[in-house]
Amino acid sequence: MPARVQVYCRRPVTLTVGALRQLVADTDWETLAEHDDLDDDVIAASLPVRVAAGDDAAPCWTADLEYGQGRRSIQLSYDDEPAVIAERLEELEELLDEHHPDMADQLLERLAPTVADFGFEMGLDQPADLGGLIAAVVAFWIAEAGDGLIDFYGDEWYAASDRNRPLSRRD
Image (cartoon, rainbow, N blue to C red; front, top):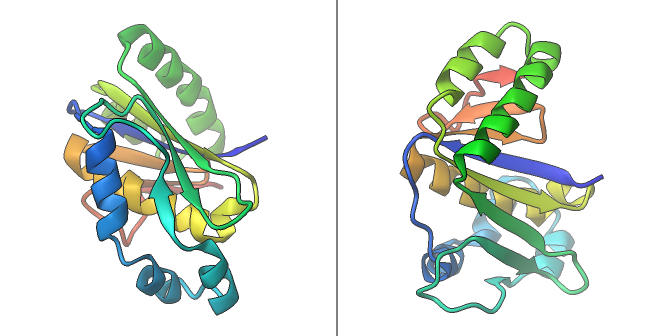
């Protein structure tokens, strides 16, 4: 079972491969990783970070974020189909009631106007290395552009406006 990060956007977000590539290139991954207390050996083995091949002008429906030698890439996917989003929100209602009972109603209210969904999929061990940091940086960037909420691994929910304090943590 993969580890997942989901971004639910209340405004449309036009993400191109080129914009994603520029974000990845402009980010100082080494400094961020040091700030996250990642081991120097892990950092050295994880760089560089890059977006796999794709036309810069193309919409980013899917992308592979690659880092380090032999690491599984992080798969980024996008969906804006109303029926798909409605189904995901319906599934979320049950999970939120179970794992975030104190905040389920507030989170569902904030998720109701979702128009786009970005998902990050990675191996179970990757959230503990640079993979988790890559997903977080890109997820917050997308969430800021789309007035979104971020679900980190089903455990923590964040609003784009407050990176330092989760809206809810899993019980």
